[in-house]
Image 1: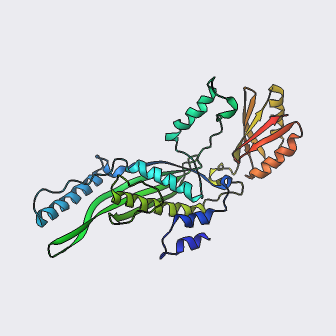
Image 2: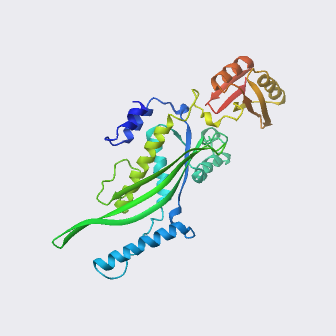
Image 3: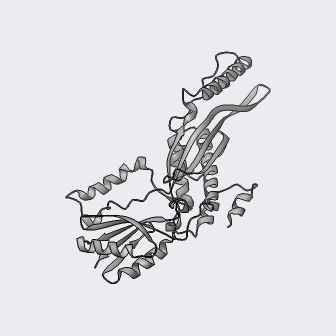
Amino acid sequence: MSVNFLFAQKDEKFTIQDAKDHCAALPLEKRARVSVTRFNVTTSTPDDAKNSQNAAANNTLKAISGLIGKGGDAPKADKIPPMLGDNLATGLTNALHQVNCYRVLESLDNNKDLTKEIDAGDNKYARKNATPKAGKQLGAQIVVTGEVTEYSEGSKGKNIMGVGTSKKVIKMGFTLKMINPETRDLIVSKEFRVQTESGHSVSVMGFYSSSDKDPAVAAVMDDGILQAVQYLVKWRDSLNITADGKFAGNGNSDGTNDIEVDLNNANYTSYNEFSNIIASMKCYKSMEKTLSGGVGTYTVTYANGNHSKFVDELSKKMGSKYEITTDDGVKIEVKVK
């Protein structure tokens, strides 16, 4: 399914299955690594003069409407759900993981849950070959952030011969950004506005549980997340992901790329010998290196930007004394035989 078809059909509602079909053949290692880091709710900031004026005007209109219609006190000011931002971040992370167009990483805010397990490997009671190892976590190539800039609640209904019905209506606006964390370049910035009502059916995508929540809030969040996913899936094809799964936007300004190479079972002699092997490669530009605990670590800057060619040349250069054991597109692990 082409991306043009996916987003040109205005009469057909976008579904998560559309996105799954679009990215179905994309292997994990060739997806851009993305992390949804936060969703702020800035519309309720008390020192924001513009938001305060809008809120005051909105509540004045509510008061007039209430007094003319039935008298009495003005309705209370709109109350923004306290977990709105956190739930939007969680829901968008969940949705992006479902569509298989990106390699979704856990937010650093929740990373302590993972590092506890890694740190447990140092415990004397832990089985060393059955615990996660430090130094293998990936970084996000794209950071996604959100700002809820607009939120209001209202109602609409009909009154026929004294009998009325009304539905709760919620409007929400938010800005979504995709940022290259290495260069701080703003890749995408998009504003979304969503309106739903309590009678709106909440989709079964599972973004947000409404079992004990306001169904109108659940609906507006669900629709907002769906629109955001549609947009991010559309942008996936414009991110210039290279054949080896790297995000071209993470390259250096001079057109070079960086790769980490780890040499296991190393001593001082093999550490220096392997350093000379890397330096003799045609694409080699520079490196930083350290030796600690029998592991030599080389951060290599190379030209041409083709990871596969780098690995092929390294493999030929190092001969039979060394063996490549891991190549995940981000780090190469080699051991001394």
